[in-house]
Length: 303
Ligand SMILES: NC(=O)C1=CN([C@@H]2O[C@H](COP(=O)(O)OP(=O)(O)OC[C@H]3O[C@@H](n4cnc5c(N)ncnc54)[C@H](OP(=O)(O)O)[C@@H]3O)[C@@H](O)[C@H]2O)C=CC1
Ligand SMILES: CC(C)(CO)C(=O)C(=O)O
Image 1 (cartoon, rainbow, N blue to C red):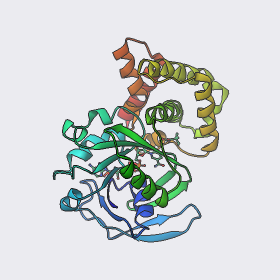
Image 2: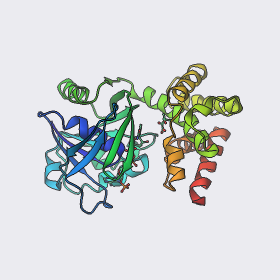
Image 3: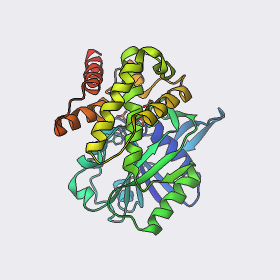
């Protein structure tokens, strides 16, 4: 399969490494404009702490034209620009997969993309960390849920993509209602990310009693908004899921806290900000999510 990965961050290089292991795949990378001379190799450290050098091939605009799968591994707020930076005409049959946290992105893609291509959402729970530029570590084993958000994929293409991804980095599951999964992942990020970023704590500390009220209010608001969007969730099971993820990733620094500490833009607009915006749209107050959104925004601006 001809695969173009967009984004030289932790997740982009994680997929690059595993997908390029198979001779059946031709994998190429598009880096951000900040990378003027991409290296010929990058360093990859596996879960069992073995480091290796992986050959890296960067994609020309020409090769994008013939890609079967374009995998966008950029932050939520970078997706639209990343697609816009592809100036050539993408092959009509190319499938575009969006691998990011947060929501409200696919609907902002240009119409020329939405109308022509099958768009997939890819929700990944693997952990990957960039130690330096083009040097990443696979830090946590996880899974990937994938499903259609625009277009109707034929079964052959769906099976081909699923098999290719599963052979590379299992376990990958096709989700017929990926929207449900997106909301569940959103709930996890709406709680763990702002609480860790605002309080400068590790994920595990989110389960401390002092955050109990904030967690239940965040989730209750999210469940109400999800319902307005046609997604049925229950607060109790979401709170259980959030607590489980916080325990399983107890020693992790969340991506939002890492971004704040490194003075980078966070994905807050696509996480609690997404709930806040939908609250305005549906005329429903979302005070806890709005508060988190504002707090993290002001932390970003302080840097
Ligand atoms: N890392 C993890 O463990 C997990 C991450 N995720 C999610 O996956 C997504 C990607 O995460 P991650 O890889 O960690 O993020 P990073 O910020 O490490 O990587 C994003 C990369 O994309 C590059 N980029 C930005 N714009 C473009 C563009 N127009 N063309 C090409 N490349 C571009 C960035 O370059 P530059 O820095 O120069 O802008 C950066 O190298 C995020 O939404 C994250 O929340 C989800 C689960 C786990
Ligand atoms: C699940 C969690 C909270 C793990 O750290 C995450 O997705 C993030 O940090 O963005």
